[in-house]
Image (tube, rainbow, N blue to C red; front, side, top):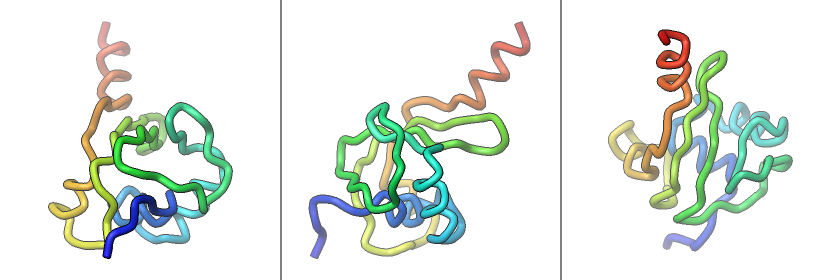
Length: 100
């Protein structure tokens, strides 16, 4: 049975943004993840389909994604990619700006 919302740390782990759930919890508690343009301070914050997340990627890049679905398990990469839609990739934008 799928619920209407899921903890942000669990969703980030299911969607394979972080290798372990502990890393996802640490990221959520540190304030580096944004949910609908608001800084997340707790790992227990709920996400639901339609929410927009800003997730840091690498040293200086960010990725903006829209939650499409809630996962029920941490599956293979193809299953994880179906959980979100990429709206913007800050890493690619940084390369464009630095090239100009």
